[in-house]
Amino acid sequence: MSCYFGDTLCTLTTLLIMGLLGFMGVTIANRRKISLWGKRVAVLSVWGFLACIFASARDSYYLSVQASTNSDVIPGIFAIDSAQSILGSLGGAIIVIFILSSMFIRKQQYRKTVFFVITAIIVAKILLIEIARAGL
Image 1 (cartoon, one colour):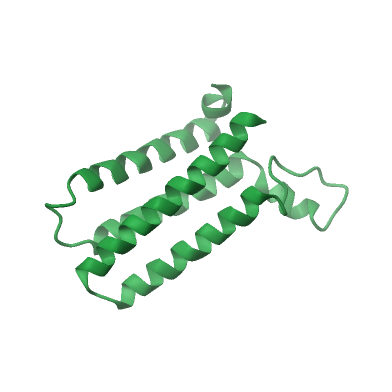
Image 2 (cartoon, one colour):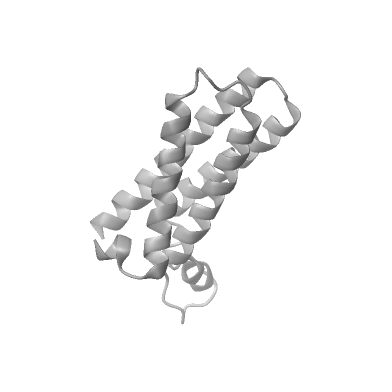
């Protein structure tokens, strides 16, 4: 439990992730009642981005980036060339592409699909990182 509630940054990251999962769950449960999906996509995107930033800081990923160019620096939990880093970055890039496309494609059915695609990618990223952290 200390890796989730050990200090302020871990606790805040855990709460952000739990809130994000809750938001996704509530939205999925009420999907038939929602007619405008643009705000949901925007909230999901900003909240997911904040959770990603805090998780990167919690796992000292910035040290891994520094260690890639300076051998004197001890890397963070995940190396820059690890599967977690590569898949997380790829997932983030795909999310950005979908967010940008939903800004220009105004069809609500498309935005609804974008919400579910982003949700699936975020859940996959959370599982990837948290399972890897639990195994360390």
